[in-house]
Image 1 (tube, helix red, strand yellow):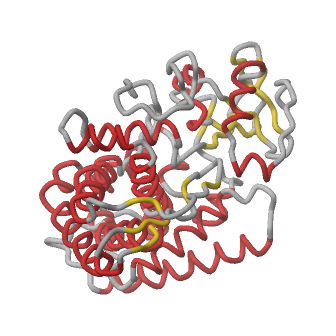
Image 2 (tube, helix red, strand yellow):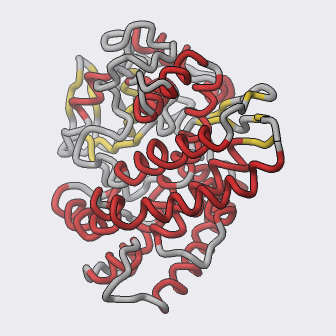
Length: 387
């Protein structure tokens, strides 16, 4: 086991707000072992940026990891040539060109339909009533699982990421995850039966055309769902909340002195939707004087990297004008998020501008609690507007 300094945490407090604990880790034990998580945490941005690329030591291949046991061996849990081959097979569905030429129009239609339903109400929850159905509709289209509803997509995604963060081993959480993956497989079966080899740009279709084995195809669709629903949902609702609680930033966007991409980039640095990525130590190594032993579990704390004082002044504040370049929102190594172009388009070109254009007088109607450390976002964002 790693000889990193031992740091104990209160899991409930860490999930409620991980940032004070992460700040203490960065200051006094930037690489530390947390027994409550059974992992060695790397919390400084430069260590994470460097070590993420050293796949010979910090491997994504985790045959006994939660994600593999619950969702199958997807491309995120492969390294080197195996990872690249599956990434290439999936790329035509998620490439910037496909997003621009095909998915963007569908994103706008879905968002407009949600807003048509929401606007006459005069009040709502930006998580459940806006961000969730918008992200879900986008993901149903991109995956090819068009027999699912956005609500079903959100439910199975949440069950899977809860399962993948279930380091406490809660049996009920694991059971919900298994039920969700079984439900996804049923919808993949339907998508495969209507598969159009010539024209379909969905994740199911492009992987089938590339000749991927079916177990890999299924695992990668589940990966896309686990990363393509909750994170955009949380980023849309979270960025809207950040702008509503920082009216000068919102005014800067409306006046053209800043843009929606800046608003999102700063939010994702400040409150990272994906706060952690796990790795398995493949061979003995030393990082910053800490020994890592084979089969140790290491967590790369992306959420901590976004608040690293070495790169960001006033890191705990939301500043739409700051340089967010050093942040690791989508990763930095060979496992850089394959869906980054789709996420950026959905969040910054569609959901946020259409929301604030349609509801220009929207205001917060109550507190917006946040939760999570491996994945973090608002539980609800209550708002109201004149009708």
